[in-house]
Length: 77
Image (cartoon, rainbow, N blue to C red):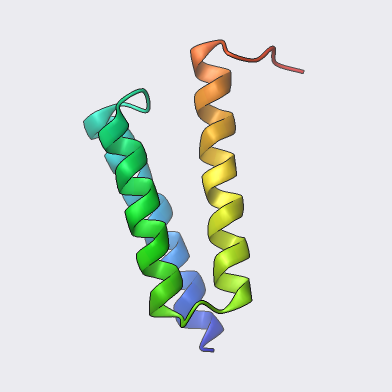
Protein backbone atom coordinates (compact mmCIF):
# COMPACT_ATOMS: atom_id res chain seq x y z
CA UNK A 1 0.00 0.00 0.00
CA UNK A 2 1.21 3.49 -0.80
CA UNK A 3 1.03 5.01 2.69
CA UNK A 4 1.91 8.52 1.54
CA UNK A 5 -0.99 8.48 -0.94
CA UNK A 6 -3.31 6.94 1.63
CA UNK A 7 -2.64 9.55 4.29
CA UNK A 8 -2.93 12.34 1.70
CA UNK A 9 -6.37 10.91 0.86
CA UNK A 10 -7.23 10.78 4.56
CA UNK A 11 -6.22 14.42 4.96
CA UNK A 12 -8.36 15.36 1.96
CA UNK A 13 -11.29 13.33 3.36
CA UNK A 14 -11.10 15.24 6.67
CA UNK A 15 -11.34 18.51 4.77
CA UNK A 16 -14.29 17.17 2.78
CA UNK A 17 -15.95 16.01 6.00
CA UNK A 18 -15.63 19.50 7.46
CA UNK A 19 -17.15 20.96 4.30
CA UNK A 20 -19.99 18.39 4.31
CA UNK A 21 -20.70 19.16 7.98
CA UNK A 22 -20.96 22.86 7.20
CA UNK A 23 -23.09 22.24 4.12
CA UNK A 24 -25.52 19.73 5.62
CA UNK A 25 -25.11 20.09 9.39
CA UNK A 26 -24.07 17.15 11.52
CA UNK A 27 -27.65 16.54 12.61
CA UNK A 28 -28.70 15.89 9.01
CA UNK A 29 -28.94 12.26 7.82
CA UNK A 30 -27.44 13.36 4.48
CA UNK A 31 -24.20 14.19 6.28
CA UNK A 32 -24.00 10.75 7.89
CA UNK A 33 -24.85 9.08 4.58
CA UNK A 34 -21.98 10.99 3.00
CA UNK A 35 -19.67 9.86 5.84
CA UNK A 36 -20.65 6.21 5.36
CA UNK A 37 -20.42 6.28 1.58
CA UNK A 38 -17.17 8.23 1.33
CA UNK A 39 -15.37 6.28 4.06
CA UNK A 40 -16.39 3.04 2.36
CA UNK A 41 -15.12 4.33 -0.98
CA UNK A 42 -11.77 5.19 0.56
CA UNK A 43 -11.47 1.72 2.08
CA UNK A 44 -12.31 0.11 -1.27
CA UNK A 45 -9.76 2.34 -3.03
CA UNK A 46 -7.10 0.73 -0.84
CA UNK A 47 -8.43 -2.81 -1.33
CA UNK A 48 -9.94 -3.00 2.16
CA UNK A 49 -6.46 -2.84 3.69
CA UNK A 50 -6.75 -3.28 7.45
CA UNK A 51 -5.07 0.09 8.11
CA UNK A 52 -7.55 1.86 5.82
CA UNK A 53 -10.51 0.24 7.57
CA UNK A 54 -9.23 1.01 11.07
CA UNK A 55 -8.29 4.60 10.13
CA UNK A 56 -11.73 5.30 8.70
CA UNK A 57 -13.47 3.66 11.67
CA UNK A 58 -11.47 5.92 13.98
CA UNK A 59 -12.42 9.01 11.99
CA UNK A 60 -16.11 8.09 11.95
CA UNK A 61 -16.00 7.53 15.71
CA UNK A 62 -14.29 10.92 16.09
CA UNK A 63 -17.09 12.59 14.09
CA UNK A 64 -19.66 10.85 16.28
CA UNK A 65 -17.94 12.17 19.40
CA UNK A 66 -17.88 15.71 17.99
CA UNK A 67 -21.58 15.42 17.17
CA UNK A 68 -22.44 14.08 20.63
CA UNK A 69 -20.44 16.82 22.35
CA UNK A 70 -21.96 19.59 20.25
CA UNK A 71 -25.51 18.29 20.52
CA UNK A 72 -25.33 17.93 24.32
CA UNK A 73 -25.95 14.19 24.15
CA UNK A 74 -23.01 13.49 26.39
CA UNK A 75 -21.42 15.40 29.22
CA UNK A 76 -17.99 16.76 28.39
CA UNK A 77 -15.21 15.37 30.62
